[in-house]
Length: 289
Image (tube, rainbow, N blue to C red; front, side):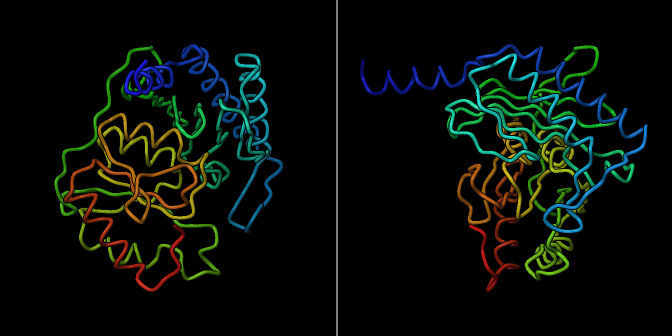
């Protein structure tokens, strides 16, 4: 076999889904229902982790347990990496999960949070889904197969990023780090630089939703620093499969080990202009990448 043929075979193997999608959609729905039931019953335990703004509730833990146990029964040979347990596996295939993304919104009753489930093969994301709650908007993507919005009826539509060609025509979204009160490198300079030169900036409080709606064309770009792999793995695949572009703050293709992200529709007047504005704002500051 030639090296080219071998490379093509490897790519085809990576693009295959080693597990059926339907059980994953059902699992996400069950986890979403559990989260909403616990929220409605009243959250009795809310704790801080790294900072007072970095929250975890009993629902985060319960949802991660549910997802981990169901995935273990579906794919017993795969590893698992969840935000709350945070034990990085060494398996070639592993699941990367954020059981409740946007916990501050969730704990406060703000209707804008999500569940992220991604399947990783080594460093490549093969499959990702983001379930946005409480409306149960389900976004999913498979490497090389496109990105889709799935209604509760099962009907699906293919996703495509926006056609905005400049920041002046682009609605953007962003987020701010948990350490914003104690570290001046907290996205304030970037926000101040970008806000006047775009159509608008939204702060939704859940990167799952930020990236999902970039892939759907509602937002033209999303930027944020200090992110974690479980925040964005599913959403990065969504944006890429919907025709967008995802890099870090240095402009290099995004990798799960990066802690900064720019996800856009890929138009130079949006992505490159946003990248330049971020780099200008960060001039002289510590660069995470």
